[in-house]
Amino acid sequence: MASIDVSEISFRYTDQWVIQDLSFHVEQGDFWGIIGPNGSGKTTLLKMLYGLFNPQRGTVFIDGEELRRMQRSDIAKKIAVVPQDHQIDFPFTSLEVVLMGRSPYLGRLQFETRHDFEVAQRAMELTETLPFAQRPINELSGGERQRVLIARAVAQEPEIMLFDEPTSNLDINHQVEFYELISRLNRDKNLTILTVSHDINLASEYCQKIILLKEGRIFKMGSPREVVVQGHINQVYGSRVLVDENPVTGSPRITLLRRDNVGSAVE
Amino acid sequence: MIVNPKRIIAICSLLFCLLLGIILLSLSLGAARVGTAHVLRILTYHAIHSGIPAGPEDLIILSVRLPRILLAGLVGAALAVAGCSFQALLRNPLADPYILGVSSGSALGAVSAILVGLSTASFGMPLASFFGAIVTVMLVFHVGKVGRGLHTNTLLLAGVIISAFFSAIIMFLISVAQNEDLSKIVFWLMGDFSFSTYHFILIILPYVLGGIAVLYSYARGFNLIVMGEETAVQLGIDVERLKKIAYVFASLITAAAVSVCGLIGFVGLIIPHAVRMLFGPDHRLLIPASALVGASFLICSDTIARTIAAPMELPVGAVTATFGAPFFIYLLKRRKV
Image (cartoon, rainbow over all chains, first blue to last red; front, top):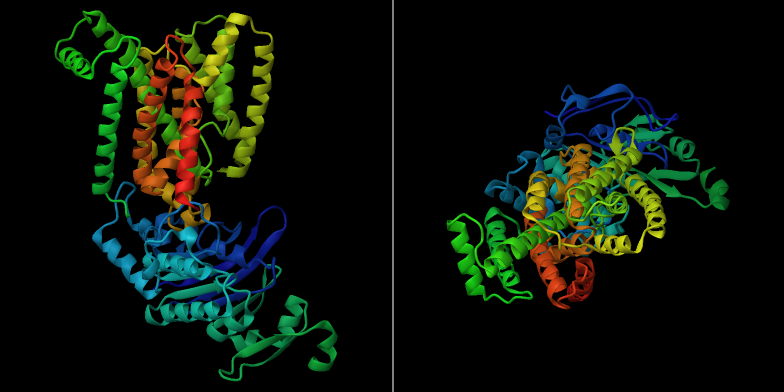
């Protein structure tokens, strides 16, 4: 069982609070999305969920255990993070990168065992990254590299997976593939998933619950139908959008509007 | 190729044999040519029978060439491993052991020692240089610290600024130096093994071997940190601790190496890079392989420095740069990236 309990956390880098009095509870196997405009505290919140930052006030509990008291390697056995795409200058192969996911299970001087290779192999099968197992990570395309990093997270055998704006560098086809893959992980492995997302439509399509952040506070939290509402989105993002339903799935869908169209379309 | 103990042992054994071959060849080369077979006879004889070397050839091999070669090897290994560590710490494959200012501090120490009249062969020189390096390391560490953590960009800037400051003092000292001191200073600044003794080897050996051992024990952590500091945290590494250990021990072995022979450039930059191109970026192989290749490379360079224009000697740093740069270009071209 891996639940996340966030209890009244606040965080500031300097004097201004960027996260204020946030509380929520994520159950094992849930699939949550965190949305909000730039600077609303999404990524900072995510970083507090795996202990990169500790909140100055309040506490994060993983399975009832205080996160700040846990060893880094113990956290890494429970929580895997798929970071935003970034440049890597050292030519590790995809397989080597995926094997790094086994790091929390290895002693400092220990080498990967046959079992670790099997876990890595399965993770690469699942993410369809085996064809480029021997290629250096810095020579892959954005979509391929993203899948390798997901494979590394899978190889960690975590109970919780956190994603930081995972689709920001992907084209539309890869964005859908990405969400299909992580909802498969959510379903088949009963992984708890939290993803920070810029794409409200994809988040409302795939997530069970959504947190809408505004200036470090929860503006609205609940099912996509409860959160992705015209009034909320307009108020938080400060731009006018049209919210209707996805004609196929019925999930809420937003349409961005040009400023000069706003009157005729919304009213 | 995935790194496993078998592969590490295989490659390192090969590189070790290469190193032994280079040592043997270097022992035989010089003003007095001694055949390699004869060198082997002398070495085995004295390995079995302790005592003072008898003939002139024994004396040249055992008291002149061997300490110099062993010291060059030790320094080469130290600089190469320090280079690997700084490149990992700063996540920049073009970093070198001098990037954070160790060189300027040790140079200031050494130049001061020369100016107050300490001889290059005495212990005062390496001591002053080591002291200068350690003071710099502590200064840069202090300036580069943000809160309780090390911020690599701040560290880099601190290194640059403190280097610049010390270089200014060195320039001043050079401008007031006497002529006979000047050539000593120039040789020190470009690296010089001509005063090698077994004492120097024994003094730096524990620092260098101990430092390399500590750094090697964090090799897997280095693999993770080059993927990004946050990534390393996400994979269970205590990154702040790792950065401090990398910084302190890589600086320590650099300081120890530099203190006995001056500033030898290029080894710490080119060797890790070349080894990475040959055997991949995994630090569990990269660190020991770089140590062995670094030792071989610096022994070769020093042998060239003392033989190519004999009886005159060149500064070994000039040789490492002359031979290192084209080799580096060749490797870069071969990689076609």
